[in-house]
Image (tube, rainbow, N blue to C red; front, top):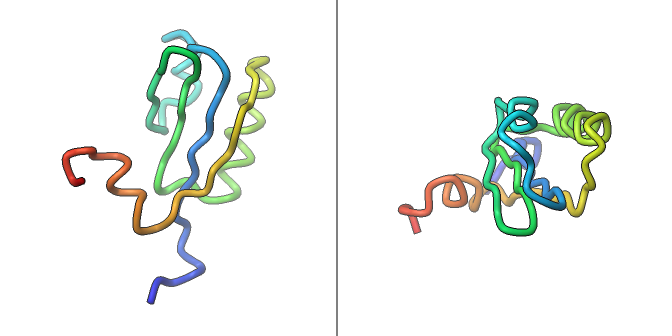
Length: 84
Protein backbone atom coordinates (compact mmCIF):
# COMPACT_ATOMS: atom_id res chain seq x y z
CA UNK A 1 0.00 0.00 0.00
CA UNK A 2 1.21 3.50 -0.83
CA UNK A 3 2.04 5.88 2.00
CA UNK A 4 -0.66 8.60 1.79
CA UNK A 5 1.67 11.13 3.41
CA UNK A 6 4.19 10.80 0.56
CA UNK A 7 3.99 13.66 -1.90
CA UNK A 8 3.25 12.44 -5.42
CA UNK A 9 4.02 15.81 -6.99
CA UNK A 10 2.03 18.20 -9.13
CA UNK A 11 1.54 19.14 -12.76
CA UNK A 12 0.76 22.80 -13.49
CA UNK A 13 -0.57 24.02 -16.83
CA UNK A 14 0.02 27.62 -17.90
CA UNK A 15 -1.71 29.22 -20.91
CA UNK A 16 0.67 29.98 -23.76
CA UNK A 17 4.30 29.26 -24.46
CA UNK A 18 6.59 30.79 -21.87
CA UNK A 19 9.90 32.16 -23.09
CA UNK A 20 13.32 30.78 -22.24
CA UNK A 21 13.88 33.79 -19.98
CA UNK A 22 10.73 33.01 -17.97
CA UNK A 23 11.57 29.32 -17.82
CA UNK A 24 14.49 30.21 -15.53
CA UNK A 25 11.93 31.08 -12.84
CA UNK A 26 11.01 27.37 -12.82
CA UNK A 27 14.54 25.95 -13.10
CA UNK A 28 14.02 23.32 -10.38
CA UNK A 29 11.02 21.87 -12.22
CA UNK A 30 10.47 19.95 -15.44
CA UNK A 31 9.08 22.08 -18.27
CA UNK A 32 7.36 21.04 -21.47
CA UNK A 33 6.33 23.78 -23.89
CA UNK A 34 3.38 22.76 -26.06
CA UNK A 35 1.79 24.78 -28.88
CA UNK A 36 -0.94 26.33 -26.69
CA UNK A 37 0.33 25.80 -23.15
CA UNK A 38 3.34 25.21 -20.98
CA UNK A 39 3.35 22.31 -18.53
CA UNK A 40 5.51 22.52 -15.40
CA UNK A 41 5.78 19.46 -13.16
CA UNK A 42 7.81 17.58 -10.60
CA UNK A 43 7.20 14.34 -8.72
CA UNK A 44 9.01 15.87 -5.71
CA UNK A 45 6.87 19.02 -5.53
CA UNK A 46 5.10 19.08 -2.19
CA UNK A 47 2.16 21.31 -1.31
CA UNK A 48 4.30 24.03 0.27
CA UNK A 49 6.50 24.24 -2.83
CA UNK A 50 3.37 24.24 -5.00
CA UNK A 51 2.22 27.47 -3.36
CA UNK A 52 5.60 29.00 -4.13
CA UNK A 53 5.27 28.04 -7.81
CA UNK A 54 1.76 29.48 -7.91
CA UNK A 55 3.07 32.76 -6.45
CA UNK A 56 5.75 32.84 -9.16
CA UNK A 57 3.13 32.30 -11.87
CA UNK A 58 1.06 35.16 -10.48
CA UNK A 59 4.08 37.47 -10.09
CA UNK A 60 5.06 36.89 -13.73
CA UNK A 61 1.53 37.68 -14.90
CA UNK A 62 1.02 34.22 -16.39
CA UNK A 63 -2.42 32.63 -16.72
CA UNK A 64 -2.89 29.49 -14.65
CA UNK A 65 -5.04 26.91 -16.45
CA UNK A 66 -4.92 23.86 -14.19
CA UNK A 67 -3.16 22.27 -11.23
CA UNK A 68 -3.23 18.49 -11.20
CA UNK A 69 -1.90 16.22 -8.45
CA UNK A 70 0.14 13.39 -9.91
CA UNK A 71 -0.64 9.91 -8.64
CA UNK A 72 2.42 8.36 -6.96
CA UNK A 73 2.42 5.44 -9.39
CA UNK A 74 2.32 7.69 -12.48
CA UNK A 75 4.87 10.36 -11.59
CA UNK A 76 8.03 8.51 -12.75
CA UNK A 77 6.37 7.39 -16.02
CA UNK A 78 5.35 10.93 -16.83
CA UNK A 79 8.95 12.07 -16.51
CA UNK A 80 10.39 9.29 -18.67
CA UNK A 81 8.10 8.26 -21.55
CA UNK A 82 10.41 5.32 -22.33
CA UNK A 83 9.15 3.62 -19.14
CA UNK A 84 5.69 3.14 -20.66
